Length: 194
Length: 162
Image (cartoon, rainbow over all chains, first blue to last red; front, side, top):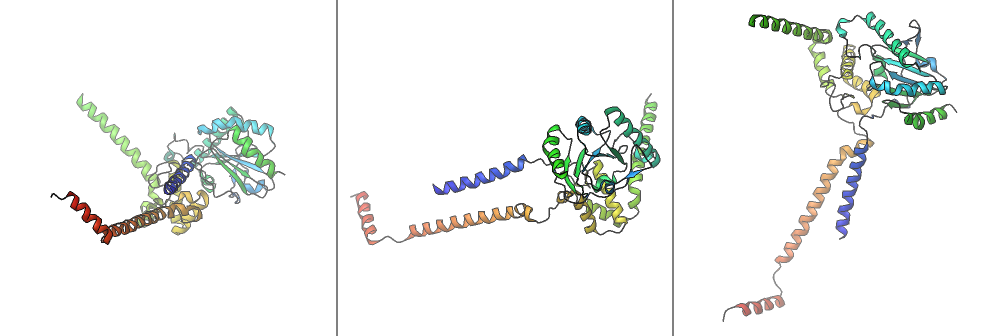
């Protein structure tokens, strides 16, 4: 009798282990960048292409970096949340426009010269923000996606919370829902801004 | 009629072939000239996971990100980076998940040790069972005691035809 309890217990433990494993979202890959300094970049600003911006310009502030693109469908879903956020919260929200032209998939990049891609990227990004509202304090243009690789971007949209010392404190992959904003991001911002 | 169809087919085929060749040339030309680098790229790509299509390596995957990461690896090979440096570059950005062979760490102990532990447990249970079975059989093989022999004789006599 005792022996059967033992076997049953082992089986229950195995089921519990597998149940936890199945409940995890494989798309949520923990970022090794959390707790590390935000990787440096120096990219052209969408509204003023002759000026550049990088994380060091944001030193001393708690800020958000949101990776987006006009071709990204999920970005459209989170956009109203960001617009609402920018109206109500006094935290800088920097947009990182990721592979605006080459990420689209509708262009033959082997036939497009770099300066034409750049022009088209600025034009498309500006147009999209004019159309859907602009929640960003500033948007910087990562035309070839090189900065995206430094930030470990693998599924747009992604959002990073960066603290006053320039450390990444949180990464969220996928669209920001009102729930994620209220339960994860807002409390963290409040704590960091204390 | 048949001729016209053939011409149309020919034009279509040559157009298709040319675009394919063009795309190939643009992306592969850089390292194709260097077979050693190409081989290293291939080997490294098979060790790295594409984070978009998670069960493919960046060698198998044709996702945008996989293409970008292959390009990154290619550049690093050209810059003379070692394999370890290239792998570290990926791990710093995407975490251990990017490795197709997870490293042995405290949190991967169950993953690496689990099968071995299960096999040892199985062996232990099997050996214990076999040992118990052997002693049981041994016990049954003991010669009968004097008391048991007389009882057996009595029983045999009972059923023996007279």
